[in-house]
Image (tube, rainbow, N blue to C red):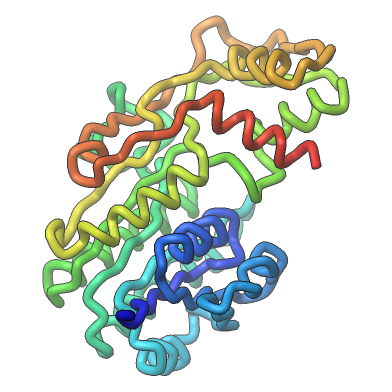
Length: 304
């Protein structure tokens, strides 16, 4: 049997990182899952003989270099990020910018040639100039998080072009699913299961994507990275769904008696955002799973 390829996943204890680790393990890779503090989401992963948890801070450049030299991964999946309601810019730039720089430099020094970098729809801004939003849409950071993610992308672009590293940047839309117990979709499902009212404060149409689809997109990017070299790719459903329609759908799927409570502040014309995923379909053969199937799986998960 051929030796399994080593890969490193940063942010392995995060919502997306943990699901990504699981997907990579199921695709017969040896996964080093890097975490910084909380290990709750990787407890199950630790039972897999092909998974090894690594406690590491990406803001520590010397330690990142030592780790990269030790495990010599075939690729790095960079899913670690600082996301919070925070007015202080320091944590965002320490993790999302300096951390990304440290990873890329450690890859350069240790001849790691493939990086799959997790980014965000937020880099496009909160007021899209046109719909659907494709990868050519102007970048319009509007807070410290979106600015830090754009800056991290700039660093990826520089390393790809100047140091011959294959880097695929994946920009995610609203990610939901197994492993996450917060956010609008989770809130609706939990409320419906408890027969509580589903409260809607803002009328929006947005693009939601299941975490399993995100993990699969990462794996496909890994398989195609050497051919693509450097690409920016949107990962979403490529469809918009209204938040009120979504709430109604969840009430039906959970067979709940919950009522909708809609704020009078909700505008008749909703805020809208959704991706053009033509590039993902073409380059990664990306095909999101049926939304109802994703919601059913998430309902079952939250019902436990």
